Image (tube, rainbow, N blue to C red; front, top):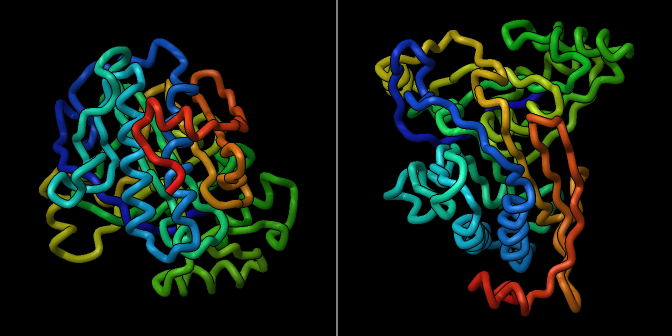
Length: 331
């Protein structure tokens, strides 16, 4: 289960009956495996951010990670458009929503980026900071317009056919436990530690389930998570959650049905999605960046078409990287 989080995205309108947020463009799946090209991008962002771990400056860390990601993504053989980025162009000079990325050749794709998923984690040298990137065929990533919050429910393949975001949280926990052949006391619920979730926390504890709180780094948001879950065979459901009447009206004006439950396929409709992540700090999923005579990184690469999940451990010669990346990874 996943908690509500901020998510910034550009405007969108419904086209020919297709859900708002989808472009009126025929889907063209990537015709080759972009995985190794894409992981170089998150590796670069993680290595740049790694020098800022523990410095207490989350904005400084984010700035170098964005720059590194932007430099390396320009070398990838694709014609990409940033759908989920750092924000609108006026607030985000690089990797903004709508920015063209890639070298202009190859498949036409939507791109979701999070150069640092967990800027506070990075600044405080805490666990589980990642650099994350997702790619899907052009027009396949859902864009909820000016709504910045989304209620989300995520689970692995065992319970993917059973849970429903419209059900009470206790009932979903019972369904997960049944699907996994265990008791509710053996279920762990991951939730963002925010005061607004106090009621949900009480409901979870009433079932006997355990809670793992996360203070930051709720991976990328619904779109990026959906790309990963497509490869894993899991489920992500989402429902737009406007924070006030003004945002609610903007969503309605954009053609959104605020009662609609969005499935994994609604969030990312393409059948050839890529998800890549590189650890910045040590975490339960990936090891963080390590510096010595060389630099080592640990990454995860997923492709939904094949269902392939790869772990990649890399050793980098920083002097050679600087020669072609124009990034000073030493500082």
